[in-house]
Length: 149
Length: 129
Image 1 (cartoon, rainbow over the protein chains, first blue to last red):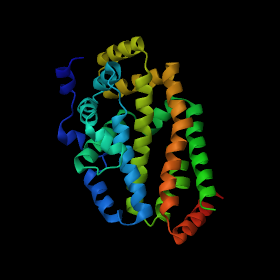
Image 2: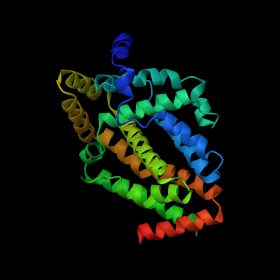
Image 3: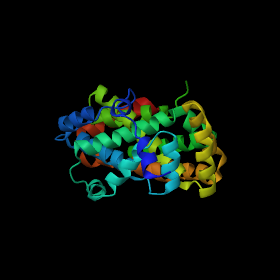
């Protein structure tokens, strides 16, 4: 798949900002609302960083991009380009996150969500994966309980 | 419909955000955002692990399918049938996700007031026992 073909798979703005997208403006507003409250602000900041990282983890392998491309998730191509610049370093070093970066990352996540409804993706992997998700949840919880004792 | 994320949401994420005095509506948004992040990371791990030959044949297959639903089904099916992709997702849930959850909870633990920590203990007790 060449660059032109991939660009054609980029969804129009209206479609990308579909109903399953949590508006970047909401997240931006939330960040401003809680940034001075240290526990809440820090968790929101971490969440925003993870959004950026989740979008940035795609490696520039043609098959990964190709698979997502034929599924209509071509947007990751422009994101890959976007996040291979200094923005990656910004995200990883907790420098300010621009609203534009949040918007692009959220759009990417929304596209992936459309790709696979929650239950069908996890469900299609079988019970072992469901159990592992449960395991991660329990382990996180156990450590949290110990931390606040 | 069964939600595999239910426990994670109700027993871990909601109490954490609630204890940090985040309004319920905002907590709802953050929890859904986390589900999206986890799914995105898991899907990307699977896609990145696809061997070249399988990836090529999957691309061709998806191209030939008429509806988006069929395309998605083919994608999901390929993840469960290609062992390295399945292993990549399982490894993510087993090793990386707990570390990520720990980092999130550290944000709370390192910054919360004594009152917020007490509130969290009470919420965890309510939700988990």
